Structures are given as C-alpha cells and as structure tokens.
Image 1 (cartoon, rainbow, N blue to C red):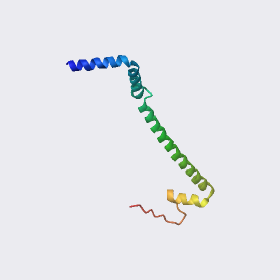
Image 2: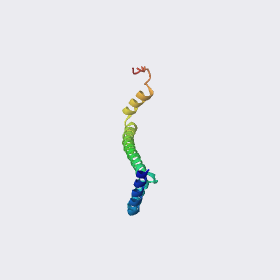
Image 3: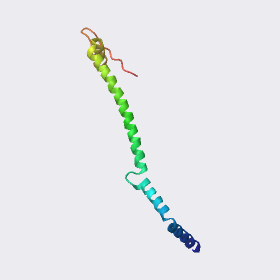
Image 4: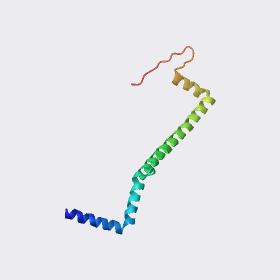
Length: 103
C-alpha cells in the first residue's frame, strides 16, 4: 500500500510540475480520437474520396467509349445492322437465326 501511495505522490508532483505537458497530451489525444474531425475520420474520408475519384475516372472512360459506339451506330448502317442482329436477334426476310448458348 505504501508503494502505491508513493507512486501516486510522484505522479501528482510530476503533473503539478509539468501541467502544460499533461494538458498538451490530453488535448492531442482528444483531437486525435474523440473529435468530430479526428485522424480516423479524416483517413476514412480520404479513402472514400480516392475510391470516388477512381469510380469517376472509370465512368468517364466508359461514357467516352459509349459515345463513340453511339456515334458509330448513328453514322454507319453496317454497324447498326450488326448491333441489331447481335443484340436483338433480328434477321432479314427469308433468313433463319440460330441462337447458340454458351456453355
């Protein structure tokens, strides 16, 4: 019991002598973990921003490719016919269409 009291007294003296250091440590711990803009929330936000930027880049490229494909379908009759045949199984008169499934 005497040892615990001695340790408590030493800690109390150290805190009295270094109150600014203790307050700084408490402040840093509070800001780092408990504040609404803590380090953890900032890191999570950065991860989300990175993921959203990656998605935006992917969709921007995909939109450009689809615009190019749409332009080709609108301008070239052969591409339009190929698209209609492949997607909607359309055929010319007196022509049979056989659908072969993938295994």
